[in-house]
Each structure stands twice: as structure tokens, then as C-alpha cells.
Image (cartoon, rainbow, N blue to C red):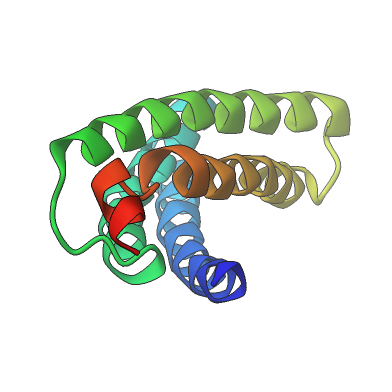
Amino acid sequence: MIRRELAVFLVVGSLTVLVDFSIYRGLLWSTGVGVGLAKGTGFLAGTVFAYVANRLWTFGQHRHEASSAWRFAVLYGATLLANVAVNALVLRMAGDAAWAVQGAFLVATGVSATLNFLGMKLYVFRPSTAEHASS
């Protein structure tokens, strides 16, 4: 089961990253917003897609539970902070390197994706006690 969840999570995550990266780069190229705001906006835009897709497809939770939405919000709030902080740290360390923006994005995304999978599996979409007892 975990292999299937991980495989689907990677597909959903790839699509989420595409949303995140497109908005991040689009804001940087077309507006005067700072890197932190652009990165945060891209990350949050992918969050809506990620919640629905992971709830329904990755973890098979077809019945909406308000508690899972709250747990997801807490998890994504924490991983948003980690994502933006790691992005800023790598940008600072990379200086003016040609790969800085893309490299920082990839490292920040890798850190937050790992935290997100573990958090969703163990905290957000865990089976309820009643579901676990009936299986």
C-alpha cells in the first residue's frame, strides 16, 4: 500500500510543483514582487490542488472530514515556512550563481515534499479509529 501511495504522491507532487514553479517564475518575471512573496504564492497555489488530489487519489479519503482539512492546513503552514526558509538559505549560499533560483527551488521543494508525505501519511489522512477497527 505504501508503494502505491508513494507513487501516486509523486505524480500529484509533480503536478503540484509544476503549479508552484509556474507561478513562482511567472511572478518573478512579470512583477516586482520579492522572491519570498513569489515563492510563497506559488507554494500556496499548489496547496489547493495538492489537498484535493492527495485526499481523493493518494490516500483514498473520499468522505470529507473537516479534521483532515485542519490537519492539512497546519502541515502545509509548517512546510510553507520550511520551503520559503530553505529557498532563501540556498539563494543566500549560492550568491549570483546561474543555477541559484532553480537550485534553491529544487532543494526547498525536496525538503517540503518529504515533510508533506510523512505528515499526510502519519497525521493528515491517517485512518480514523473506526475505519482502522473495521479493516
